[in-house]
Length: 146
Image 1 (cartoon, one colour):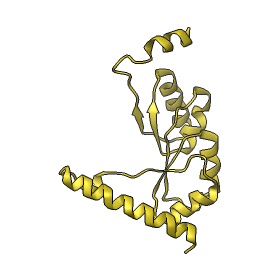
Image 2: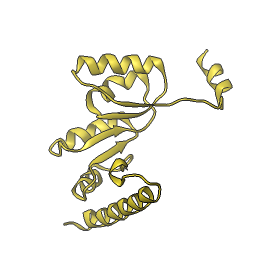
Image 3: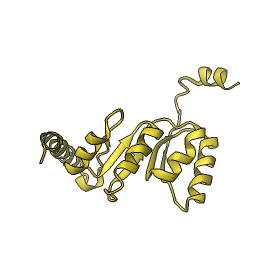
Image 4: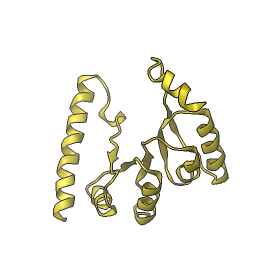
């Protein structure tokens, strides 16, 4: 095992232990909590080392960079790839065709595009919805969209 893999493995296992302790204190099953290892701005070698260290869910912030890593690491078919950053609607096809899960879906327009592209690819893309319930930034959003 390389030094990089060993280092990531130690931190990964320590984080899993912290999650398990916190889950138990909260009365939750530790297995109900998923750890997403964020690899944004990291080279493919680091993503590979994270997988070899035991990470099963990888999160990427940039669509193109994520697709490049997914394609480079396709031998690791058990890895679940999460898109964790904001997605521009013009990149919906990349996300729908390559990622297993998307965090932060923030518009109906993007939802429709993702649904269309996922359907064309014969896939389903689970998402987490982002809602602005407090009204923060609403004025700026209205000014920018018009």
